[in-house]
Image: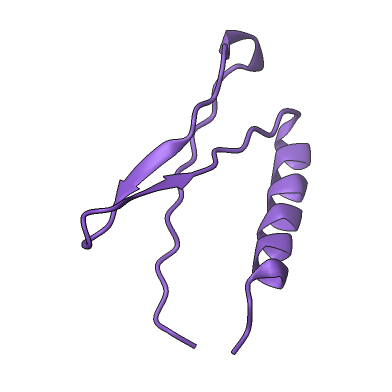
Length: 66
């Protein structure tokens, strides 16, 4: 498998303060831009941790293996 880079960010906000979440952009060495879908998980600490773990596991299950 190729050497990979996982790009992510996390920040907690009070749910009632959020208005919208927009995609992020990454600049590639080729000069192209790549977009990253931002995800929103709401709930208590335990809910967020559980859903985040499930999301990470699902992401790697979808990633094509050599």
